Image (cartoon, helix red, strand yellow):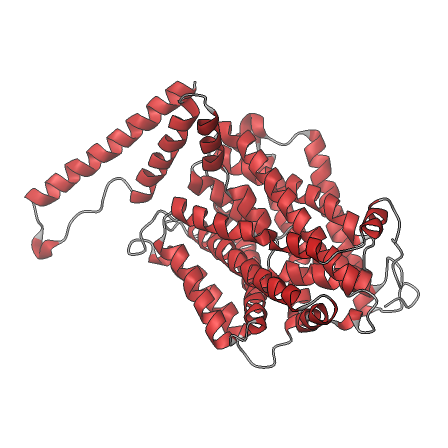
Length: 485
């Protein structure tokens, strides 16, 4: 079967090249008035995608050596690693840091593991949707459920993306401050870099550069190790010790951080991003298992980094008199005072990296969703001269987010927590669309959700709704649960 697939890909590529050659010859012989030419029959984006598929097919069907297996694995990874390491964004780094400072080496440490499992469970459905339907998330919603719900889901995504991008530029701004760099320099440079990578690179190169930046997210692991944490206290946290929550589980402070941690683990942009990424990469149903392994690797990286950050701040900042009120600048100052200047420098680098990689992937998710919903060109393989309407909304959204962060006296800490909570509030609606699509037998065939997967998805949605409801109640009625704050 794989040989037939390879032959079909080669035949498609030859037909595409032949069609382009015939039309180029025709344009050379016949020039209309004014020198205008006909549109190219075969889209360049499709031609590039077929070439990418041929590269993977050759590796899959070639000699089964260790080198070829590693090359195939490296060729197939991408969407899963990017979506999960991109999920450890600047907002997430700040949220994990505040969590450790407030609750120490306690209940949130082991909580990161089920949150990672939850993220895998949700994102695996987008892999199957993209590989089987070869359509992006926004396109499927628009075509399956009509313009009203298409606009609803798109507005949901765009608003959440712009808000989330603000937290990414906050990370870049604060990280630059650590090294004495003005945000009038760091934020615009980041914006230009993100826009340039999106617009001028084709998918394969874009993915490789993004993966290189994403791997640097692991800088928080050696930072935590070098800070010499109390490993016995860390161990006790994972076996049920140190789980005392001041104010109780229904306190507004706990619910805010719980919602924020959920929001930084699973967010609407991730659904749109990974499915579109799978489609633009050209992955097919027989790539699903490899994509699942890619996602597992990304989830493992996300959980390890989150735990490392909570260990760092839980060990050294928890118990400080102002631990509950620390913003990101306060966290940096406290790290410098209690760990050392080297820790502040590494943390600052980590903030810049987290903001940069997440800006890259979130901006791409906006472009893909807008292109799919509005029936525009929707591939990073499309040249900007042809697909300017595809790239423009994403670049404008990123510019708006960067502009807000550059305003004076912006409450950076409050804005960060609010964005993570908003992501949690938006997530149940996004999950509902995902669940309906992945259970559509006409679309998915034998790849529809199993009963167990459906039960798990419903449980996740119910937990999100309960968390949102409790947070809302404690915000409006602070004394609803015994006056806990």
